[in-house]
Length: 220
Image (cartoon, rainbow, N blue to C red; front, side, top):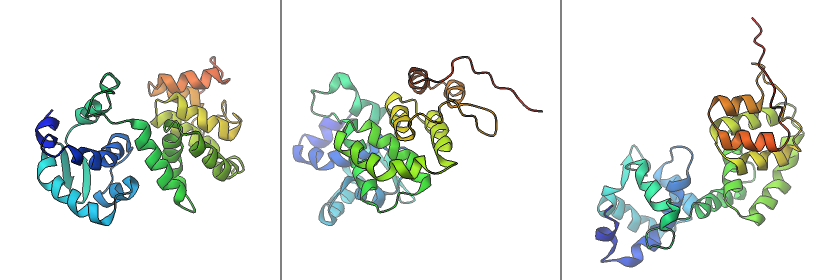
């Protein structure tokens, strides 16, 4: 990595860019440059400065294409978030990135159904107790009292995220009511987690009462 070469002459720049790196290391889908700036809470003045850096010094690490911003390669995010490097200069805490996402989404008066699963993931992974409490207070009833969404959300979470914490948060929101329910394909959440190789999500489901002996019966 060439972080030393880029940042040694201007050591303060990495700290200015840290929120950008935190967002890039924890985003779950492609985002535009402006969306990343919004989540990272970058001021208008600093945005102009950062855009110049992205086009010059940071060109080794970042790709800007059709308005979208991302790391040049996944290995850069792995390098920045590797826990064995957490006491070194160039390290990014994923929890901070997830917190930025959680705060950004909870500012919204109404989180869309398409974004809600991502928000559950970010809030769960933030390790921020206040954020979790705020999310539960504002959205638990919305999830529980909808007849179709809870099962859909649970199955989407265990399919998309191999995460014990994310699965646990969603189960707590639904009081584990749907843990063994099946979808239109006659599949439970545990079966879906196992099918996608998401062992941490599966472990959480089993720890909280999922039926380990469930078998899919295909209706022809």
